[in-house]
Image 1 (cartoon, rainbow, N blue to C red):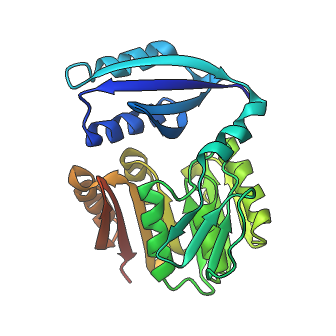
Image 2 (cartoon, rainbow, N blue to C red):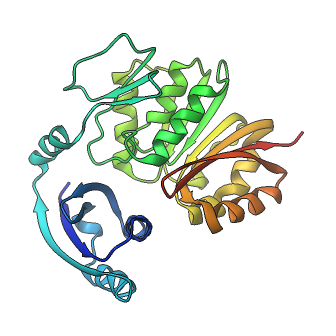
Length: 280
């Protein structure tokens, strides 16, 4: 599959504005982002890319900051080399060690997760994934049925499997994420994970004890009603992928319509993760 690399440089941009732009670029199909000098680099499947849509998006930010960009084709055979150059191991709370296959194992950590991300989101480095991992590490997942929406690399479901979850359903609309999740589950010897490619429409008519959803606010708002249908009473939802305000208030209000109450939240930079529970 052929990708395009867009190298962005900015003048006068604030951190929260950059985060908003990344979220908007994700809506245009960009699915991987790397920091670079003076800005960041983003990747998109060539067949999904429309440069006029990109120009229109950047035009909406013209009064806030100045942007320049250049586009480059990325050869398929170069992608793994790009990741090996940019993907460093990650340690979360001195408990969870996230690495790629080309890093040395460290069995001294209680939980080691091997991720070959390719073009899939979710190596743990982004604040949203890190906060979700922190929530999962403190949750009781033993013998629980788990639904992981927007699973990316499958990192959250894989960690849940290592924590003793009974069954794991991982769903992402991107076929690369779907394939990556299956491959990463195999790398981690997690055998009770099933992956599906799609969105809320492919969620099985089963019930789950815990739901993970690390997705942007608008998708969460659209899908909460379906989560409520499949979440057991007293079941937990861990959300991330959004900002404190107005996002958290909007999500809390939507959850309340379906008897799902806010418990608490974490914040890392501008990003937020939150814990909710379905009433009996």
